[in-house]
Image (cartoon, rainbow, N blue to C red):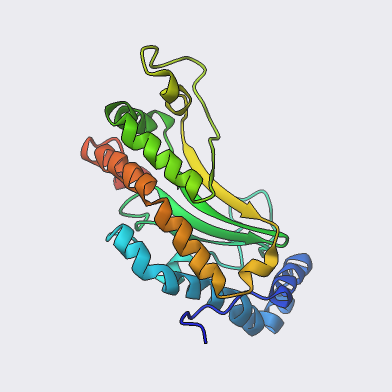
Length: 240
């Protein structure tokens, strides 16, 4: 018998989630609300419960509340161009409490109808703030490269959604150049083998990957705490 709360997210539950999204109907949702809760929402929360000890060990400020960490099936459509009320994808963040620690780096897990993924992300609302990461890379280049290698060992692929066109650090070592051009960074893994999320073995998979990538999270959180200390990021700036 599995030691975990999480037993899996079944193909039938994912199909129902997709049907709910397709119908986009309050009546359909209410009719199937309990099935969606038991088949989707509760298993997602169980993932957080099963990983909470590890996540707290990685960062003792990590929010491990399973209710607050998991996305809702229904969407807030206010101010959103899309008026579709229900999701066919779900996600969860492993991060510090966002109201107190905005823009903090985070681990995540997510799934879509035909794929799932997880990883580690550091994104700041103001790209210039991310230069604190650059400073730490220049200060501890070997530690950074070791952290990048750890992410590779975890099975993650590195990417960014924005780069500087100008070389901001012309005298930096060549092996650091690509990292010093980034305005944000993510390390992610994805798979189309949905059978892997229908088993408690998913917990072992996530634990292993997140723990192996720990050096990168520790690097990111140190840079983030520098941002807080220098008041480059403040909760008041984001939640006034």
